[in-house]
Image (cartoon, rainbow, N blue to C red; front, side, top):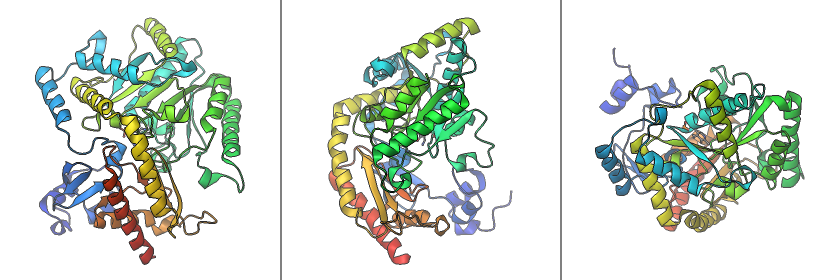
Length: 466
Ligand code: PMP
């Protein structure tokens, strides 16, 4: 193939990237003009590009590099496991030590499942999308097994993010993941985003807003027929959809509706799990007792791909029954519980224990939340500063009082991100013009200040520009 006309503007690696790579989440026309930002190495909370410039990662990559971008113990765990047993599968009752040890470690650390009971079993996959897809298939299989084959519909939330495979992408509630992909498929529904600042009526309290959203869910289930609705998916804190902290009493009311109609609750802890919200699990921060819990990302501190689905004893019993009837439970990936990522995940959990991760995040998170408020709450371009534990957002608004939003055509989010890069901070500005704040959990207090100073400097530049 001939090189693109603009190839000389790029160094050799960038030109080859443009020539050969199809990037995820990229506008492929614009990309030919802008080219890639090539990241070459990582250290602590920073990554460095091919010119040597360093950037503080304010979102830990994609909310995942909890222990930062270098860790000898995790590298050693992978190397040791590769020498001992580089691969074996878990199909047909095969197993190995990393899978057994990690299953036990996750169940021991799990939050309470439905009815205050412990979780029962763990299934492994390779990504958050696969974990959520697996959860949907488990639910369908379970309902077939226990003799209610009509109970299959799945409810997610507008702007929720659960992945991009055909089923998990259907639970996801973001236009970009649906438009042009013929999603969602039939049988998937979405209820409103629980963002009080964004969607409450004037004067509506958090509690009244939560009651209204619970009623909306109840109405949807009744309209569709409770005998046809299987499960509700929620991220304890909605991440990619704008870092949405639910209003007071929201999950209590949502769970009451689900129990009333015998609808399962799947907690997507892909971002919230492993300390992010100030407790080990987002479920513990918000009083959720789910039937199924999915996790990924921080499970291995993102050093290798691995995800997990934890299920209640009730689900497990149904799946065991159905496996008998079906001949086998025909689900699983070549790399379900792959020994190398499992060994790295196990070492990651040990490191979290040694760091007393939830306790650490509770104190450092309090520091982060206060520093965000102090710096940004009264900034003329900022509408809301919100967060819990080590996750938060700074949302832009042209007018604090009316909570107006900027015209998306002005593309202030991407511009703020670009200015951040100039200042040396990697940012992620989400759909609702909110800069997500979700740094590695290992970030120190002085580093929190430095990160927020850089984000603030970029915001001041943006204010001058507009
Ligand atoms: N669930 C949540 C809450 C997520 O944030 C993500 C990824 N951002 C996913 C699922 C999908 O994970 P993956 O990209 O690993 O498929």
